[in-house]
Image (cartoon, rainbow, N blue to C red; front, side, top):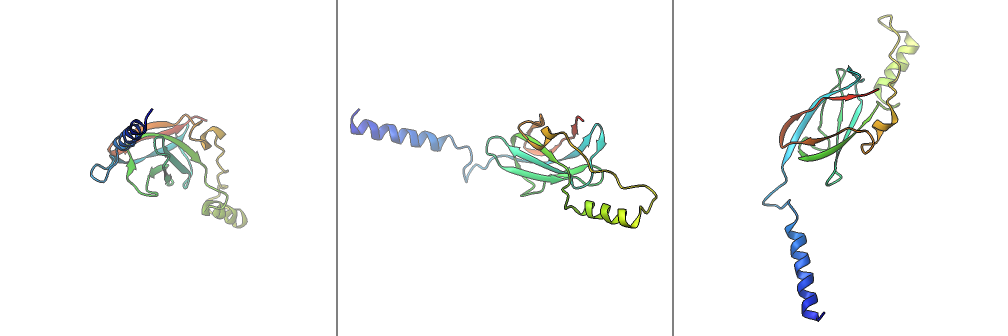
Length: 152
């Protein structure tokens, strides 16, 4: 191959690579929002259970935490998520959460309502890894609502 042919081939490859990028300043990628309810065998998981959503195309992570009823809204790092396919992982509240501190205090003080504190949630290990959890979905542009029920 001569030098001009190599230059043309290199320019074509650069032009092709630039043309394949669907996100430009003039044409941003479509986004959506996500809320839902996280349950295990139909029952809500404890407040502050973490949910991680990983966008398969870009690897970007989005985070949510459940409230007392299992409801969640994705808000970190932003509420607008890129539309597309996601893998999902779930993490129980950490040992340093306020919930654990409250449980320790309740154990020292005795339960206020006569009931012992709930034991920590044990999730199957597969839910800690989004690629192994079996939890994936397609986020559509605009508002999305998605219940997630873990099989225990």
